[in-house]
Length: 96
Ligand SMILES: [Zn+2]
Image (cartoon, rainbow, N blue to C red; front, side, top):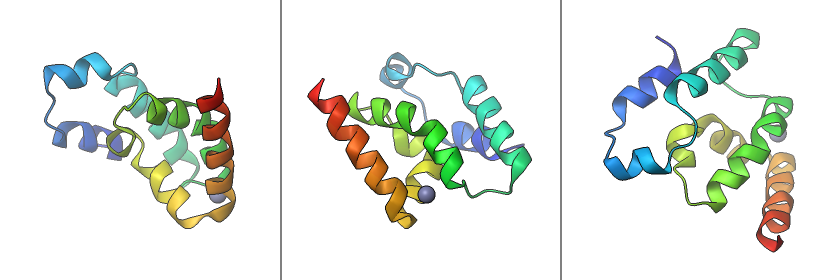
């Protein structure tokens, strides 16, 4: 069982959660599986850049990015470069 499957099983889903979620656990699991094939659990800056658009849009829509993309959040916490990128993207998307 991969990390994403575990995370999805741990989460208690409410009907509201289901309405807000626009990527399925299956898609998310595939996405993470792809990432995990190239490395262990931590994401590289390249991985984060690849997910950042989606992550930022989800965050702006108030979706559960912590539950869905915890590894991105974790990376942003540790990596000032990616955090800067995220903040810039967030400003741009907020301005639209
Ligand atoms: Zn980074």
